[in-house]
Image (cartoon, rainbow, N blue to C red; front, side, top):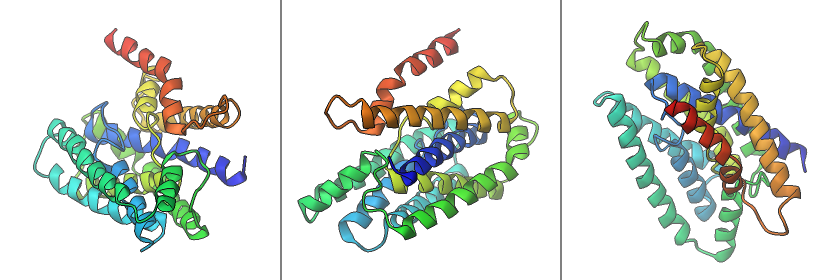
Length: 265
């Protein structure tokens, strides 16, 4: 267990739920998620391209691809309603993921393929991560969190239907969410559930509409869930390799069941 590993457990446990909560408030839809518009897939594609080609670092590759994806999604928002946007986002994410699969399956060598897989397993081993990657990701995280706090009041009012956000504000918010996604995924690989499940669970636990309450609850739950999963895969792995994302999906099954049961009631 290293200090950097724990740092990114904490960072990812905050960045992904906060980004997911912002998405849900921005689109007034509980299916809002940092992966639902293809942002997570784009970050993975950028990391794959960087790993296989060596043209840039992991974080820069993820940032460039996620920025392009964000711009595409923003222009789509100008033409469609929220439900259509989420449908588009899922399809677009599948498209981006397919490009990533093509890049990875055409790896120049088995060593690069192994390197990418170990990064993508999201076990906070920081495979192939440089000091520059760390510095850039921390800057992105700081920018994303600062924007989340500054926009909290207007997002809450927008979610309650008291006001409508301008297209420029939506674009800036998407860019801020992109920073949060990239800060975590570019270093740790894809981590599922917490950017969708944790925000929904937070809204079940706390009925307040003030988004700042859900930032706090979601961050605490995200860090706690990731930390438990990290300790399980590191010390209770039964002698086999357990990727963080897959293990979290298994451990989170009771939480998902709670969401669906409470939602149906």
